Image (tube, rainbow, N blue to C red):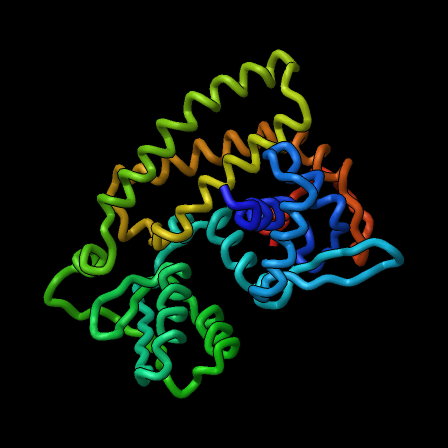
Length: 291
């Protein structure tokens, strides 16, 4: 696992406020149980700054890091998809289409935009046409603004008039069988781990550090589905969708790991620019669900 990817997981799952500025020593402590040294973490932070995800400032002799606007946009959208899936909300029956046309000299921008659209959950229909049943207007507009590509992209909201069914459109844009196979692998891997950890939890042998590590690993693996699962509404999914079983397992495991994991996180947190916590065991994920 790359330390930068683990940091994204920790920030997305534990930060109550994505504008929080966290001391480098805290970040080093969070990655320490995963085998990363002080030097490796500092190199990772420098790389993430160059990539535009983080920025830093000095407070006395201490360095603090926070997300950039680009980083906040990415994590807000990702956290919402993990904890508020579209399958829990009724579909309005409309499709959102993005069409793009970039000149050859902008091929690098085109590839980045395609990756962004895929990450948001858009499926590719061909001929530079991307489609989703979810209302991602705000997210697409933010992407257009960030890349400065207003003249190269068009956004449409439409209804499908046939001659096929909306579920046929789904199979054209996404490989649900491949996605289901990935969910089955997740369930098979984490069901056994869940049972073992829950026994330790009941026997009170589960430590704060163990809970923190296991929750990070759980979220780290589950959030990989952001790159493959388009987060379709219930009306467009198979009746026996294995993603539902994976979501149930994820929520149950996350729930019993949270109290001890949060204590470990806040025990080692040194941050500035945040309000006092009313409840130290409410994570960014919980706050997202409350908003």
